[in-house]
Length: 146
Ligand SMILES: [Zn+2]
Image 1 (cartoon, rainbow, N blue to C red):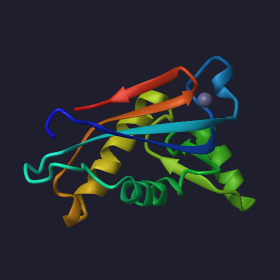
Image 2: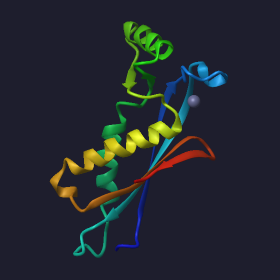
Image 3: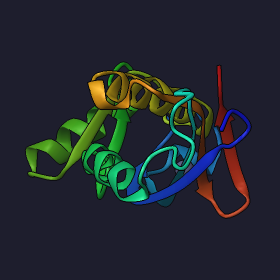
């Protein structure tokens, strides 16, 4: 199985803006984000399956639920943080993060968080997160891998 990589796609809808950006992305706008996981199995005994697609779906969909239909904002950027706080005052769903929500940063953030999530469960010790790919629109993506 060492040359086999499992690929699983997930989608969620969320709004964001880029406080530092001088162009259109400075404005609040939305995307259908697509996250692709690439996984390997490091257990030499498992010859037939890396992980059941159903199991990985359950784990990751629960994790991504925090982001779905939210406004993602960077807490240390005044522009983004002020919009986030106003939305929270009105009871809207937000997701505060610790960096700008560019495709580049999100792919690294999802990689680190999902890697930690997989590590936290003893049953998935054999899983290796090879890479995370984040699409903010069709044809535009960023891959993060170690
Ligand atoms: Zn955008």
